[in-house]
Image 1 (cartoon, rainbow over the protein chains, first blue to last red):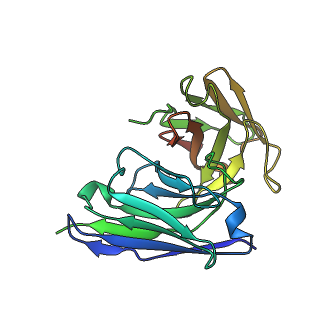
Image 2: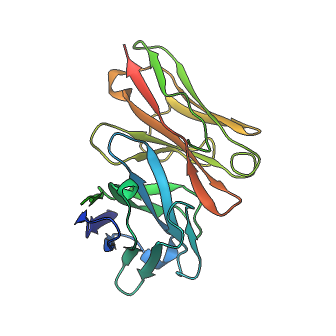
Length: 121
Length: 109
């Protein structure tokens, strides 16, 4: 069975940094694009970032471009997102999601349960 | 405000057929396939429909999807109480970003 387990969330002050990880198992990690999708409390889903299976192509929402960096280590079956210059509006549950193919297309056939990031002083 | 527009709410009685719309533009729905997600309270989203009208294994055939031009629809027939959830459409955009609809809260009366 596919499993996606996020970690690294927590409370951080505005302007601070955090790195989230997503440990994947149950599939050939390098064959699939991966994404981060977040959900602010009581709000809808927001696409954040995606990375191709090889890691050679990365994509970002305008709201995080220049502040967040997505990466992956295919030898460790792990997805990351480095989040810098955090703002209150970044407060959300961050889900990692597995795409159904090599390139990102918002077809997420598996999701992690998410990790909560709270940006507050 | 989401790039893909969904009605914030929908409702129906058990056994009824309900549809949820998703309106986009030529750069997203108009040129890429649409996916639909169901999110039950307190859980992660679940893929319901992919590539406009394909159901993953395990999804009942009561759920169906369609697309025409820059709009898409999710239909649920034979509505059941367990279908009460939030539903989201999603599509890739030619600007190389992912797009979600704002979500539709379905209430089974």
